[in-house]
Image (cartoon, rainbow, N blue to C red):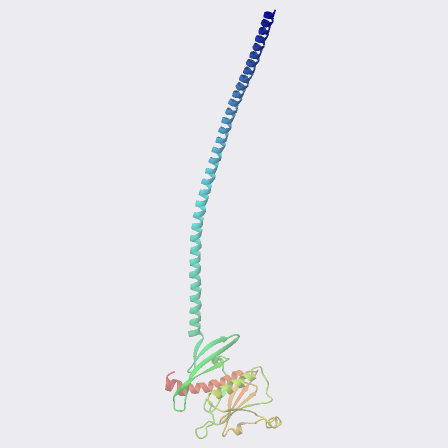
Length: 307
């Protein structure tokens, strides 16, 4: 009985062992199947990875190719741009050179123009005096310089006279005994010079400038210049000095008045009437100065000094 039980137990145990072994085999088979599936999946993954790598490599190759093409194109463009810049630089350099030459040419032309204008066009000789035309703002001057000679014949300096009118155009009747202006001399000394104005003459814009021009010139020439009026009653009423040609024995009288013409007339020895029309008072005043300078040029400049 006991043996049967033991046998039965053994059979049961053996059966259990066999069942365990079967279970183990099943597990092993399952594991093997899983491993096989894993291996297959791994193969599939590897294949996919290889395909992806191929696609990536192809894409990278295409990208590299495009990059090379773009780089090549950029290089060509840079070379073309450099070439264009070089050509543009050459053109600009040529333009700058021509601009510089052009500016130098203009400067030379301007310099030559003013040199020619100053030395030939604006310079002229008038009866032994060399005049230079100059412009100061809106005012045009005709200037001349001449030597100042002392009583002993020595040149002690020079003097400049500036006229507002062209000496060549100051044409008017000149009625004097000797054709020149002479001043009263007493014992080798010049007498006083009176500029006597007609108090009733027309007052013009240039009246003040005209009288100032004559008086300044005569004073600079060493003469004692005084002012006066021609009318006795007006002189008494205004406490002024009156001078007319009857006072020219010891003095030189210069009468300034208006009239129907512009002229210079010697009324009496050493008495000159400067008459003007249409306010040409500055013109007749400057002509009077020119008559003095013309005589001076004849006496001293050409004869004695060769100017």
